[in-house]
Amino acid sequence: MGITVSKTVYNQLKTQFGDAIGEYIETASPFIEVKSESIREVARFCKELGFDSLMCLSAVDTKGMKISSSPQENKTQKPAPPKEEIQVVYHLNSTFTRDKIALKVCLDRTSPRLPSVSSIWGVANWHEREAYDMFGVIFDGHPALSRILCPEDWEGWPLRKDYVFPERYHDVEHKRKPSGAEFLDGEKKQ
Image (tube, one colour):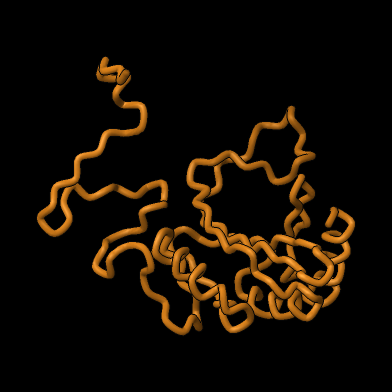
């Protein structure tokens, strides 16, 4: 799979869905931006194009990240302010042609929600539950959206950058040092 295939798919999606398809971001692993409300229809169309496998669905919290709008961004310009969003990325694969594409949806951090694709690729069921459990992304139409890693009564979304780890959970105290803290305390482990 190469950039040529991704660009071809992008052109097909742009023709079919118009403004619901955003930018084509050409990187080592190119991706196509999709508006959240259109992801289910775009996913269904991609499956019809032969992308029969959802390899991975990932969520990313971009809070505080400096993300350029494109790899060609003018380096002399002042960088854009950090984006405050949750991104959901769909890595699709064709088991017939071995082609791969990635679709990316950008969501508002305060209420991240989008349609479920679990009716298109069954494996999305668990991937969406993990994105819900760790980032708080609501997948409308999911058959059983619930936590998959944390207990049902867990509060918050542990992989969000603004998450505050609880000091206690069911009367069990949690003491954590940040990674590398032993060096800050002067304790070098041998």
